[in-house]
Length: 289
Image (cartoon, rainbow, N blue to C red; front, top):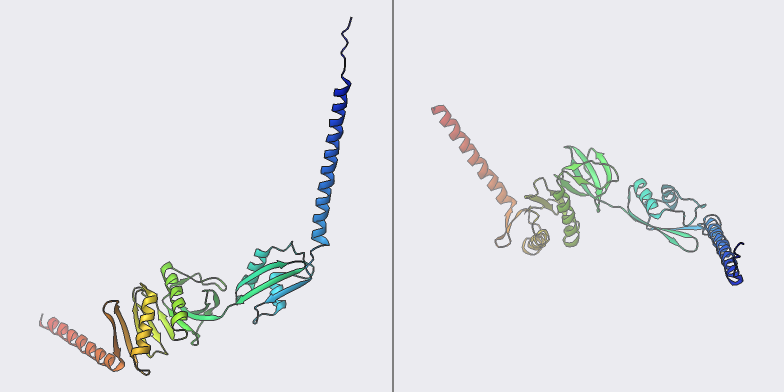
C-alpha cells in the first residue's frame, strides 16, 4: 500500500505567487533597461544637439579657425564632445593660444574661452638660432636667424628639444625655474625695463636695464625678489636719470657698488696695463732662461 503525500494548498498558492512576482520583476527590469537605452539614444541623436558656440577671448584667430582646430561642427551632440581632448586639439593646432577652456552650457551651447599668447622673450640657442616664447614659456616661433629686438633677450638657457608649440626645456632644470621666477619679479617690479638676461652661469647672472644704460651684476638667483626690488630702488632713487654704468650687487649686508662708464673705462685700461706688464715680465723671464 503506497503512502499518500498530502499537499498543502496554501503552500502551493505561495509558490505560484512567488513565481508570478519574479516574472513581473524581470518584466519591469526589461522595461526599465529599454527606457534607459531609448533615452540614451535620444540624448545622442535628438536631444542636446549643439545649436551655438560661444567663443570669447580671441583676436588673432577667428571663430571659424578655432572651431576648425577643435574639429567641431553644427551637427555635434552636447555630451558626445570630449571637452579635455577638444582643448588639447585647439592648443596644439593654434600656436598663439596659451590656454583654452571648453564647457557645456545647457540646453544647447558649447562655450570656448581662449587666452591668446603674447610674444614675451627671445631666447638664443645653438649658437646663432633664436626662439620666441610666450609669458608661460611656450614656443611661438623657432629657427629664427635673427633676434626679435623688440622683446626681452635671454642668453645661456641651454635649450633642448626646441619644438613649436611646446613649453621650453633646458638641459639645466634650475635655469628654467630661475628664469620663470625672474619673469615674475620683472613684471611685478620693473615691467619693460629689463632688456636682456644672461643666465649662462646661473650663479653669476647679468642683466641690462633701460636700453643698456645700466648693466646689473645680479649674482646668483638666491633671494631674487629682494635683490631685484633693492637694485631697482637704488637705480630709481639714488642714481641720476641719465647715469650709465655697472651696478654690482655684493651682499645684503654690504649693499651694491656702482661704477660709472668713465670708471669702467679707467678700470679696463688699468686691467689692460696690468696684463701687458705681466706678459712683458713672462717674456723677459723666458729670455733670461
